[in-house]
Length: 217
Image (cartoon, rainbow, N blue to C red; front, side, top):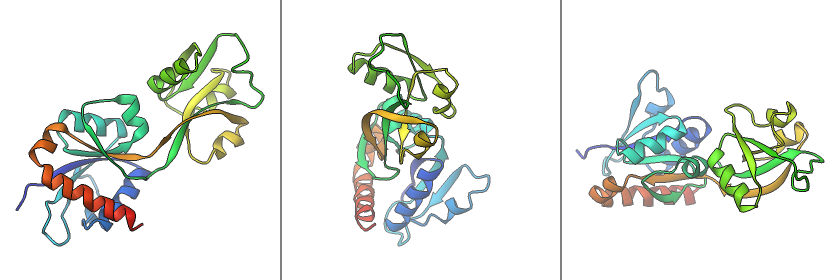
């Protein structure tokens, strides 16, 4: 039997969407439905003709680390994490899962761009925010937070936020408006450079299977 190919998958909503995609591609993902305390989960191919996978469920930043370091051959993580963290890997496929976008937002009526005062921007993505604001010619202090970004302007901690926006409902409910949309985001399949050289045919076959599964949605 072929050795399993290890894939790291970001936990949460993306995990469920990715699991459904893998099932459509022919993988038995029952181990992910009731993971228990197991940390590595076998995902056999249903007809036994393709190499099985081993899934590692982890936080999104760790997915990028595992693939960059080569302990996982493949990974599924959001483009937001990939941009923020960076690393050495190939970005092979846009899975079109978890579609959303980065945006700069502030309280309604804010004079963020008109005011010459010192700017403060709260975000979970300091590198993304810094590059984006620099491109706009805005010199701002970046404040990294881990919780709800919308709280920062409400509490007077920041003048604006850079965050992921899906529907915009949370912004509106808290009196914030989008000042600039930045770039679209979705889940991507990333591949370790060395693993792709060693198991290119198998990985390419998996990618083709995922493409077919995605198109059948």
